[in-house]
Length: 437
Image (cartoon, rainbow, N blue to C red):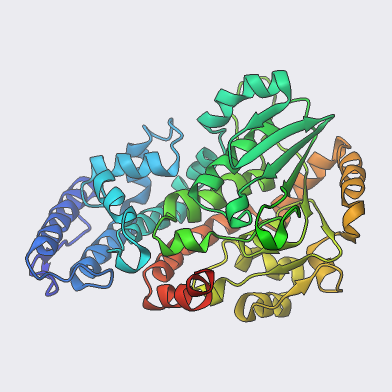
């Protein structure tokens, strides 16, 4: 072993096999945690003890992600979601990821005062997602139906309606309509809204009588937009500033959960009935009223048909906010071209739905009073049974799952870096919080 001068604790010399390397890493992480507990220790996200511990975590995950994942999932017989995996890893290998208590303590802090514990989650999921065996299995687990949706499914099948508070689902003929009602924040997304959206998407995919899914924002109560529908104001910046947007439930769970389900469908256990297992997949339409900002613009990139009011617009202000705009960096160059992608991501370029550039992001821009009719017509077209097979082949070649998986591995680490960066809170205070106040 060599001595890590940042903590005075010996840095683990790996390469002795999984069991020995795990034991050495756990011992090292315990010593680092002791160093953090000393009076006057630098507990900041960029502090030297944290840096030493994260170096050890990264080196362990580089070598042993597959073996660790097999142990966590009983040889990949269990399909665990991100939060369950993290909790089990904290118990199996102390120090590798934050404990539940550490995570809850961190969540109570505003973004400015966080210790950066979620970075350890980022390293953990980076290691799993980059693995050719653990990564695909984890992604499949995240595409399984949620318990919340399965509990609501009998009632939805019977009544054609489900209410998750911030999101409702209604079946109209063979169309499943998902409506977002986060009126206080102009349909901006946070952890709670992402959870509700995933359950709603699950219901649309699980109900056999639904052929096409539609997502739309509900009417607003905000004085400026009272009575008008709004698609999405992106990430809830107030919640982010207050430290209430999490890596697992929002930044990773959102991309690997409801967005990936819209794009690739639900993963279901192989019941042996068919010769080739297939996901539960349906075409989706986005109906955009007023604007789709940030995360709202991001998710348009996975819909099969995007229909917008002709006065609507799209923006991606993530750089101004100080974060990475989800998987837009992967998908927008494919949809809008490299130059438009850079202008949107780096310069927050506004793209009007009715403009030539806007037609790269939406299929139709119609007067607001014709939006309902345009959505119905599109749903009739997309209900054609052959659409599902065509979209499956199209998606497999335009964005192979391994491409998305490697992107998400890098995203897990880079988004953590942004969340613990010194400029993030300054950006939020300068561009949003002070204005909101």
